[in-house]
Each structure stands twice: as C-alpha cells, then as structure tokens.
Length: 262
Image (cartoon, rainbow, N blue to C red; front, side, top):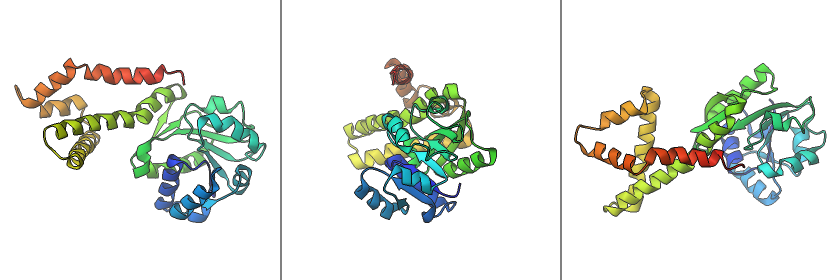
C-alpha cells in the first residue's frame, strides 16, 4: 500500500486523508486525489497536503490503492470510465450501500476489494469504521489497511448481512445524537443558560457519559441507576422520558432507516 488515491474529496475523504497524514504512516507524496471541481481540489490539497490529479484514470495509474469516495449514485459511471485501470489494484470503498457482492458485478477478478463504512466523527479521530468481513484483500494488506483506518477511529469487523444495520446505527446515529444534544440545549436555554454555554454543557455531558461507559464497560442501565437516587430528580426525568416514548422513538428511528429502501 505504497500510494493511496481518493476518487472524490468530500468531507469524509478529507477527514481520512488528514488522519492518514497525521498518523505518519503515509507521507504527503503518497496520497493522491481526484475530484471534478479542480479548483476546490487544489485548495484542499494545499490545506491538507495531498497530491491533486486531473482525472480518475490518472489517479488509478499513479496509485496502488484506490479509495472510492464519490456519491453512491456516481459509482457505476466512475467504474465505467476507469475501464481496466483498476486491474491488479486494491479498491477500498466507503460508499454506503455498495458492498462486496454488489461490486463484484463490475470489477475484474484481479481487483482486491474491501467495503468500509466510516461515520462523521472520523473527522475528529473518533469515528467508527465498519469493515465488511467478506473481502478479497491479502491478509497482510488487510491488516495494513485496518491499521491505517484505525488512526481516525475504532475499526469493527462486521459480517456482510449486518453491514446495513451497523451502518444505520453508526452512520445515522451521529445525527440522532446531535438532535438529542440540540433538544437538551434548548431546555437549558429555556431555563436561562446562554446558548453557547448550553451547547458546551450538553456536549461535554454526552462525551463524558460515552467515555465513562467505554472505559468502565458497565451496562448503560447500571450507569443510569448510579445517577438515579430513590425519589430523586433524575428518576423523575427518566420516568418522563419513558412516558414520552423515548426508547421506542430510538427504535423507530432505526426502523425508518432500515425500511427506507435506499
């Protein structure tokens, strides 16, 4: 995995490229990228430190590992334009909905492939990187890829049939948590806390609660019980959430994602 090329340079690709470079595992002369908006690509290249190129074919010809980072609906067109430029290369895809089985209809047998689903917290090095267990990478190569992606978050192996639900929880989940944080910040503002301070208060509370669960390994219910004193204020708040259908709303949000048909 000497040279890496990004086909597409949106927010997620930028986060990955920046994380890879920060890790020191690859240098600025080892990461390439192509995107149709060449001016924007050059600005990002100057800011992040990768090498911009003028076409997808040029990118494939100059790199060993290609990361498909365009929009999912663009993949067929992009693959068609590449022709045999990917033959013998490694292809990593971070495009939702395009797993190993789906790609095999378009790729030459010589292409080694891995489907990876990142989420937006990867932008700050706290992402979840789901690696589909079905892949055609060589063993040593796959370990190198996992090590590289672990620089922007936690790498989790996932069977092919669970990539959809895994992506629903980790990929859509940040938006649901953001909605929760916004709601509690609104509550803080309602009772007099300035908006900026409200977001700081709520965000750190979410961050600290998550860190405590990860470090302690305790079941979330145990941690919740530790905060809820008999006849106290917290248990009254929990009861209000239950009455409002909080848990059911969380379940329904994932149902909506899984049943969207997209």
